[in-house]
Image 1 (tube, rainbow, N blue to C red):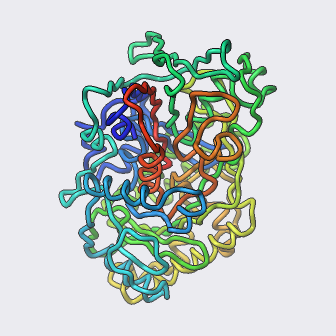
Image 2 (tube, rainbow, N blue to C red):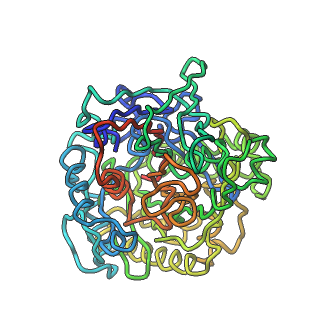
Length: 522
């Protein structure tokens, strides 16, 4: 988006993280898990845990989620683009612009090919081959990993920018937006206060002129959080934190949703390639089936959970779970042969579309570097649970298919694979004995995030149809926080297309401040 805007306007881009380049865990496909579970203060991934007890992450690096995610690239369904009122021609043009630079056809080696064939055996038809389009059936999509397994992030798109019109500040954490309260019918966004990497505070102001704007693109956690820190949000909540109210806007932070993900891990007696998502089964009942493989893809979070449980509880105030640190340690000990070995395995996951369940975001502190409280209310809507159950049943069919037979250990029936996940410390939620036998309880107890969370600044609630923040001038939000549901099987392509097509015209005299995080909603 910043690159597109710099074709005509003068742009200041403020990114709270550093560069994605030179970090092998970001660049190489095999570093996916290590980057995601790096909890150091300078990590490109910032961990948070929702009040639901589900572990999650947000980006802290130029390129945001595209520097951290599984790399799958697939367009949204055409009905989605029409429903939200976007211009299909502009969106398609933006898709092609991005695809030319950072998207590749995946290699489709043994495991991914077997999952594709297993999905077809399981009845996820037809076979749509390789396509970016969202079509019912089984397909191979794009990836932002090239043939050498090297990641290409959204930061690469800055190569399109006009260097004379764009300035990028890294490690610049925006603390609040400044408003001019006099001389205009409504408060007008005028500048921002930000902290640099050395802790020094700065102010940046827009040039004079009614066309100049501040654009929040800080993701589904960062954008509502920053609006609240700037005085736009529920008045009572803001005043409780000592924040002066600019606009009493009770819908800021509402509609927070995260697509549930549930998995089966399939230990393999034969080697499997290191792969992230390349194939997807798009079912008609509202579940998307995807897969990954390698020696670490299935188990990184378990090691991390065992080590970090105590600190996470302290940091996040998590008290609702009955899962204890001792229980987690015992679970890890029980699966040590897998965790400590070099066993090859595949992971098959299902993502619930939508979802229909949603929650809210609230401030924990007034420090923008701190995670806010967020609740997603997984499976609160019964349709989400129904879709998860059907998705897991489809995964079981894939696991039992002829196509996957050579990747199956004959001594491990499907029930053993279910029990394995029930015993894994995949989250901080309570566990029930019935989870091994009830697929509904399995979905509830072992739910994880696929990092496609969204909401908090939704159209018609917080922003208008042009993504201008209601009640003020000179401020827009353009990111996944404006979504009511997650587009397509993976929103990365749509987030790019939406951001790059959100502007009708850019005046040569415009000045823009873009606050960037990109969350993990792409």
